Amino acid sequence: MCGVGTAPNCVYGPDGKGTQSHPNEDGHLRFRGEDGCFLYGVFNGYEGSRVANFVCQRLTAELLLGQLNSNHTDSDVRKILTQAFDVVEKSYFETIDDALAEKAHLSNYLLPHSEGQKVQERLKELEQEVSGGATAVVALMFNNKLYIANLGTNRALLCKSSSDGQNQVLQISRPHSTENEDELQRLASLGVDPARVKQAGQIAGQSSTRRIGDYRVKFNYNEIDVLSAAKTRPIIAEPEIHRSLSLDGVTGFLLLMSEGLINALESAHGPEQANQEIVAMVAAELAQQTSLEAVAQSVVDRIKRLHHDVYVSGRQRATYCSRHEDMTLLILFNLLLDDPYKSPAFLSGGRIYPVSVPYSNNQSTSKTSVTLSLVMPSQNALTNGTNTASTLDEGTPTPGSQSPTTTLQSTNTQTQSSSSSSGDGSLFRQRGSQAAQPDETGRVPPYVDFSQFYQLWGSDHCDGQSTQGGLGPQ
Image 1: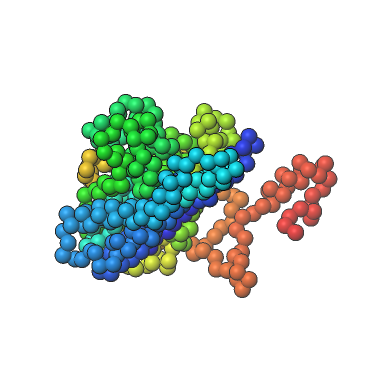
Image 2: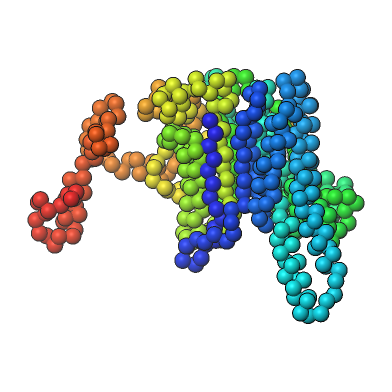
């Protein structure tokens, strides 16, 4: 009951064509341990995929090999999660100790030009080997509770439905970035000037203030201008673990997103409605696709197209869309239920119908506006309150299913005009209440009448000659 969608980074040329500037650096994990323990994560690597790959492999070993048991309290689980991240980072640095030592050794030598060139080439190789880091957002489902551990600038969204049909979208994680006031205060307590950090916007090329790896900001931070006054290590690998959420009676889906996916959508449409937009996309694809893998990939592909279309359009936000980084989306659906195999997705014959929303299959770049309850996280806690009132309809049957969970009210200008363009629907032949069954060749009978189209095409392209019998599918 988990699906992952990905897309590589892309830089657009003046003609709108995109090229990948570096190998994909994101990573993800999805594992099921013993005693109903589930672990999921999305990792945003930079300057290589080494750190993200290492964390994917090692974090699982630090959490799913007997470290957790049913007797652990919430406090115990939080402590184990925090320790796991600490152990993983220390283990990573152990793997590059020799390369760091060689790099430091060679950096102290002044050699003749011929030998010095070889040393410089070796130093460049060592720098590529040891550089880079990763940010992470991890979901742990244990003892029927959900724990979110966030470190850096990825994001976790929970769309949950209550028994009365109400929907809430909760942003559980907060970005640890140079714009986060709490993070700026933490840096200030270490002697760092928060105003300079905020003005710079980045620290050693990244906006995150918490990272795994990246030896430059962990060991050589005194050589970085904005961090030079720090009394101790300012960039840390300690995750912020949000208060556990009981999953009793909760249905819905959880989204874990890499920074690249978030930034691509916000660059194209602005940050104001990004959470609602992506939830609406997921909800619509859940009603269209037959697997969560297809749902996640369709949403990523849609965001990628939106980003590209805004760039080539030349509109106001085109200047923000000249490139995007690697994108990863992980969707968990119905693991919030005691038994996912009793969910509507399985009872309806394998097709997933958790929600019903207006949706168009055309890949319009028009902005989707969804009225949902949006809940932002408070400091050090998961907020269950409501900032705005939800506007929700009663559940309406989705084709092929009689038991959708709820309805999200969605408006999309392009969708509305597209769906109404067929007038009274006379172009469509009458279909039975049940979907047509494929024949022995795997095809279904046609249900769209193209005769009007052929007549119009003939009148425009055949120079007044008769089109009878000359047009139609060949």
